[in-house]
Length: 283
Ligand code: SF4
Image (cartoon, rainbow, N blue to C red; front, side):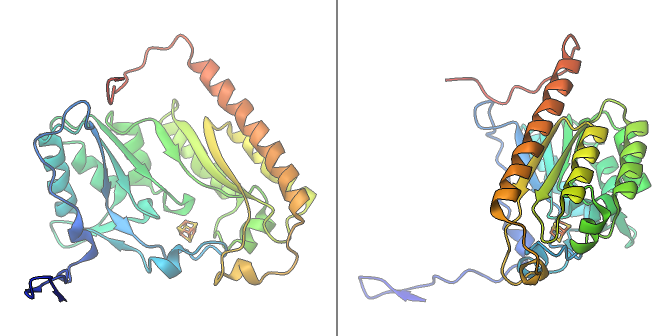
């Protein structure tokens, strides 16, 4: 409560609602200049506890919205003119929302439901963990035209030793295996990833493994960062921090390799016909 200048008392409290209830209902007034694309949060939090990441501490355990609520909201967005929805979550492919029968449904099942909505031409999701790319989700990439041939699947490092120190719970080999399954399901998929260089204890040999992985996967794009310790995470307490100059040099080398991969991907697209979604007119 607060007191206004005229002496009246004003209620300034917000009702306590579920954090997912804050999303505004879309209006019918979506125009080409206001946006044909929309984000839709389907889950929050993460149970993975990678040793460099604050998400499990700041956002808490993984929580998924019920499937029917997401479908209803997506229908409203489609009715309002939205043509492309990107499903959001800190670890989006860990989604396990309650379905109509009361059992949990994965992200693949959710995508199959969303693909039935008239007018919704494009679906995307981000960000994912390799261990949560299950068969139903990979089948969605194979079977759904609406699911765009793009996947952002962070790996962070190509070194098993560093992946273990990062508590990623996967190896370089298991990442390759997942990528192979996805490429078999959707050969034209454009892959993107995240990389951290200079994680505590990273040697030249570990970094070389990352460079090898990047070359072998052939990313269409990727994000790369120099490790910086986040207070409260296990990584911040690790000895053997990598010298700044070494980390800088590794980042430059990695980014240059990623750029080469990106141009190779772009060149391979030359001459192909692709549908595009024009989001807005240039003023
Ligand atoms: S990096 Fe991703 S998977 Fe790992 S703890 Fe953070 S949000 Fe979870």
